[in-house]
Image 1 (cartoon, rainbow, N blue to C red):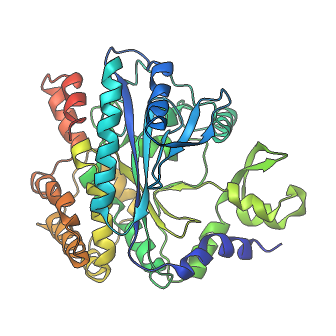
Image 2: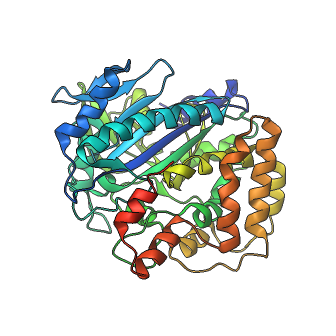
Length: 420
């Protein structure tokens, strides 16, 4: 079988019917037991049962028959992502980010009201602020069991195989046409350091400098297909060639997941010894910062979860850039032309200062705001807080670490980042 054809059908063909317009958002937040203890598993599982009583349907359950994924008539899904320390609102995509945000904050308000009964809370950070207290086991669900087995079987560069249990991010899915895809994917990858400067919110809690520890935990794990993207795509063929160099590491046989040592995708599908099936591509997993998905979306997945009041700043920023692509490309073209995306983002997330041209970050935010105004839906309100971050050269992670260094309490920050 031709690996090229399998990739093209899975990841390129869906874009042939896409047009610019819709946006989808997945928002994850640490679930914190304010008693400084592991979450009460039976109590937090009750959160999904609470929503089920309010009209949500249970789509899938854990091996213990507890709700795992539930959804409502709007197509919004609620779940625990990997562990009971991380709760996810997967908001169905649509043409108006304001509508999506309104649905989200309504659901969040109900969730917080339930959780406060047990002195638990959802807060807006990218690394769990009570990591030292949590239980790092995973939800007993097939894909999470597979991930856990893989991370504990194959070697990594760090000793945190349970890291998915305490990380939270916001993932933005953007609809766009096939012709624009290579340009947009290249630009969004190049802008990874810009988003790091604005949205870093994942201190390591073990180092006073690292602002986005999530990057290193993913990139230095046993997982293949992670991290920053230094590639330039001039065509969809370039995208397909990129996929062919990525790796397969799991598949389903007889209804059960199998893991194996990662093998290059082209080799996996074209070498008979792997006994591959074309349908195995459905289990392909990639965790790169900028990703092209089988849903026919460009996914921005490197942004940390934000303080809840600013939860929609990252998706609004990316949506605005997409709508003002020409101007964004022109502005980015002369910025650090000889430094890779990887080095630029690593510099930022390690707390080092980049010598940005004067007013550069403000200009980029203005471009995003202009793009949102073109849509005429009022979505530009979500990025207003970013001007303060640009002007003061700060972000939530920097603010958190500065406050802790001055004697502030993490408990106060947890509560502040939970407000909306």
